Image 1 (tube, rainbow, N blue to C red):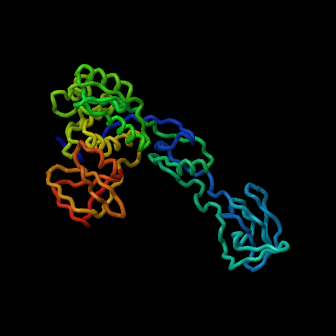
Image 2: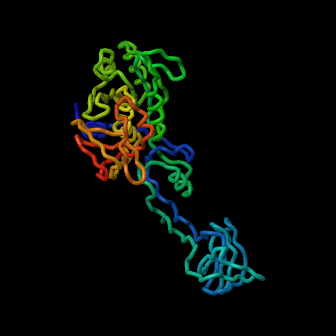
Image 3: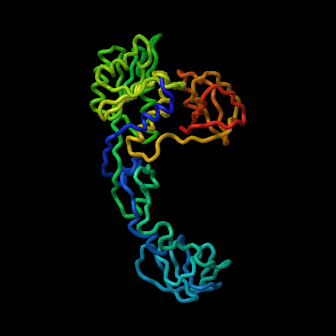
Length: 387
């Protein structure tokens, strides 16, 4: 059994053969950049109006209106002192403009503009290069592409970018007692939900599982299933069958088909029976079957690996120090991830911390990490992992 940080270190040092592909603006969101984005020109590329109003020259109470400039007009205009032009958001500002006055602060009578208040030099003018200069580094490789990233790259005139290909992922669940939701069950059976939870967790962070299959607790079936789906996957996630019970065959099957064990069992709660292995450039995580254990292992160990595989500059979930909103006593000597909920700038450690309980996971939005026995008192600062 290894420590949490040892497990994370093993995940970090894996040499992965990343694939670079080209994505267009509609398909790049959720990927990680594989190239540096350099601004090809100043942004804005010309002085333009930040709002609808009037461009004015000089500082006065009244101006003579001499024209109008709609957005997209490429003509070059020049104002003389005391002159004004009607202008619209994004339109090119005339030369010698002192400011743009928003239309709500103006009144027009017989082509004369009257100003309410004072004209401040430069107000409501977006200056050329104010946001970016030509040649400026906008994004570095490994940057996570958000909708704003897509908008920024599009505003630079680029319709394509190089990104890292995301891994092909498949999910296997094991267990004779598991029945798909929507079917009748008898006593002794339970509904299989881990594959759905893992699939949803993948989608939450921009990944996807191509296929989810269920295999009964039979060594030959498990061995055949792992071999088949690993051959067509970059990352294979297995839920269940990895502990030490008489019907837990996953680890044995992995060894028999030539998967190199990188670690097995992590000193944490929940999620101790976690297996990580690889076969050439294909990887496998065998997660515990208990729902809370499975999701905890995903957030703490699997997600950073998927981000690394996808070219992320930074991996893992955000961690913050935050005051506890309630008392909580933890007596085990094993480090623990506690289901919790952050609200009103404090975190509540929830009831229902058993590894089999998922309801508290569903009502929470964080995990509180304690590295050993601890009596948490309201107001104590604890480490919370945002999920």
